[in-house]
Length: 404
Image (cartoon, rainbow, N blue to C red; front, side, top):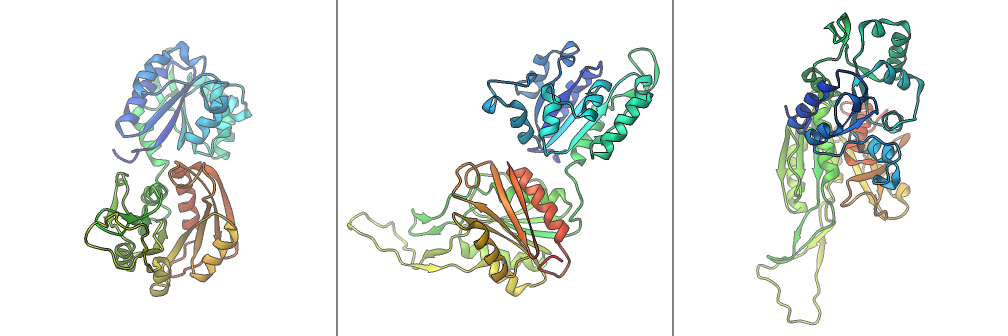
């Protein structure tokens, strides 16, 4: 299973004899490529040692709400932002009640309130506790709030009873976790994405480029696959691994990227221009290394093709999404680009900030379309990418470049 590769899973463990099953769940998630961090309640540590989960997850186990070693001593905010999904397994009757009440008096409950990530629980308790009307009312309330409820299963219980209340087996929970990321929102479509920088050669040694890491484009490619689409990723030079199920085409220069895009986009429904393409290139790259024998050197530059403009001009039926990396008047420049290039949507971010964007794992963007906009607050680029793909899926209409 590679569907969980690079996913960041926060596993909450509460006070239940089923806590021992969580050991196997951590191992299965790690084997599937996920990064796992464990939060234990005080009661959970009575059943399984935190050291066990630290060894299995290869990450420190977190227990304390106020942690001096955490970011700004606020471990709940750090973990809430980090997680792609929060899963409580096992979830005791007490922990379910606390979630239903919106309690925030320990680390796990506080993370659940603070995270924008999907939240799921795998109940585990005595069969009569599960069937009690209070527990059932709490479960119904959590379902209304969009929390995923997985299980419980029925069978023999540690107390000797037989009935519903057993935590689902770890293999089944792992499948459910993988399913959290598979929306099917773009099923059957082909999406072409550009990512990374381009390199414009000056001579055999030197080139013009920029600070783009490619992370945003690669995160978008992962999110597109999760949405059920076929993804063609046209990438400038990066050190990033190819996301699972993504067709990757490597290029170096803006002209090469332009040629690859125009060839692939004819088969696509959506085009997302996330690459940081060089606007200019040297007019005449030299074949030999330029010697340092002159006090000054003049470099003549010529304009590179505008990939996004050419796509919307040649294929008006493709839903085109642009990116506007701006250092001033971000909204004004983004909306101007949206209109001038006949885009369906544009994503704007402020590159004057050092905590997001280039070379950062995080981003914060504003998304504009004809007749609307939405702010996506600071989060990991993986989380931002999923939110962007959800927005694109919401506004995409076949054969139209702008949403209704």
